[in-house]
Image 1 (cartoon, rainbow, N blue to C red):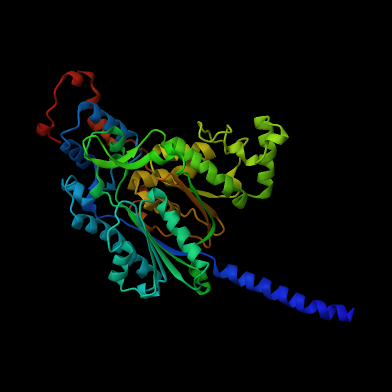
Image 2: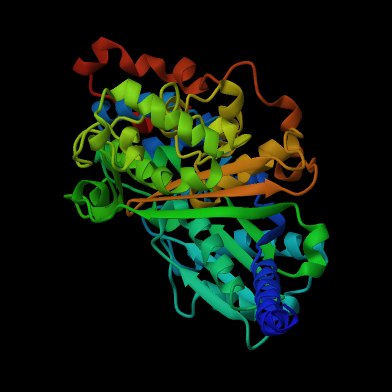
Length: 483
């Protein structure tokens, strides 16, 4: 027995060291969020009803039909009167923006949020090891990442990445880039900067599918600081638990539903088609197929399995993989319907908060219906859309900021971030709250007034006359209209 133990001892010792190494390795690969800073644009760039009307009427190519379409879109968008717009557009230079205008627009967002982030955390730019910048529509040379490095005189060995063309879900992509690098680079600090350039890409034509972007997108952005340093763990506010990225671009309809193009008159812009909602549903379904088993308790997966049998009436041999109960129909390219709850999966068994991308009222309504979320669950996304508009990749952080400002986030809570973007992409991640959070952040000046009693858009009250039937027989001269 003693001889057997002597032979076994080296093996046990080796196994113990291997297990210890694996545990330490996994600890070093953790991704913690230290802080995030959302951009609050200057008050002189606020886009109220009158300012928006002046911008619309500057486009003399618009006919009554297009004006009625714009009114209907703005009224139903879910966006309020306190959003912000680039100075290029407010000053009437949207048809001829300069490179200087674009740099000034992006610099203001990047440097303001980074200045506040460094001040808030007490971590200097020289301590940053990884930098990821995502701006979809502006990719100059040198890159925006290099511009930040030059501004803050960062170290020569900083790992810098510049992501372009990734759409509204780019922020989650950037988070994934950092967490993947954390697996190789220990004791590191990473920064993600997410924003968008709107001024140089304002659509000046008359295509309805391309005018939608002008109605929805607004100025905004965010900078986020992440780390895998054990010494900074106690200062963290969130811990990344799961990440799932889905690229649905192989489908032609999904690829073309949200794309930058030129219209027949040569005006460039972003075209949003009716198939966007369908493509979003398909991409979200595929994403959740992979993510659900990782974030939901086993008993919920078992319950869903048996509920799927009863709900669909499928025979046992037809239920591989059983998770396809999320998609009704064998061909995923056909019309898709999501049924996540009520006979489907109950994501509330593993998630306390749903941080939905504020891409528009239709997006929020669709996700809410699919998950069967309550108005309480959707309130952060609706309020972020109302107060800030669709700020592209930065939008999720305004939603998160609302949750924190309302003191909803308690230690141990899990947050599902749901992002959808051009490509078509669905990138979702789950965060765990590491301590009770209550910072009012960018919502400081207005959180007490949210949610407002009435979300109706004043455009309807002020300009609903444009829908009068008699105007169809009248030639309107908007140059003489007094606002």
